[in-house]
Image (cartoon, rainbow, N blue to C red; front, side, top):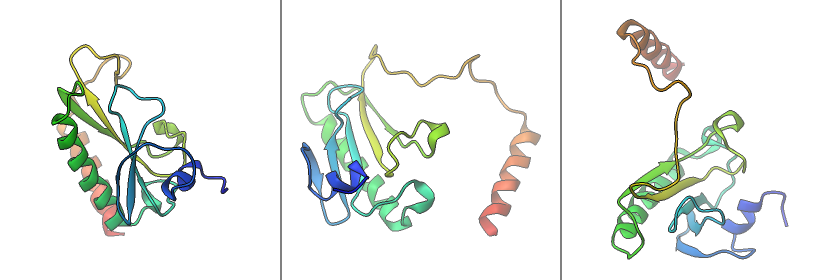
Length: 141
């Protein structure tokens, strides 16, 4: 066994409940679901985080997640909405360092929250423009 639990699960080793699988990805049920139907979409090739993930594989993960979201809505699972969530890095809440995308069914009054202390505040346009420029420059580098 490798040190990466998700590598083992993606390779078919270990107990898992598979919702979807192809040559690039596997979607398994989360052991600690936010709500019933919470699925993790894992790339079969190891990537610690987004910067390590092959761009085409990353796009494939989102295509799979889109299909799973549509499928969840066709089940009897309570699903009034869907959140897609990917934590990239420890500061973002990543605790398993194998890139993975959460597909979480949501419904009014469920217990899951993503919030910001003090609430959200609208940024000033000049700040947004400066930030956008910094990102454009980094993309070009």
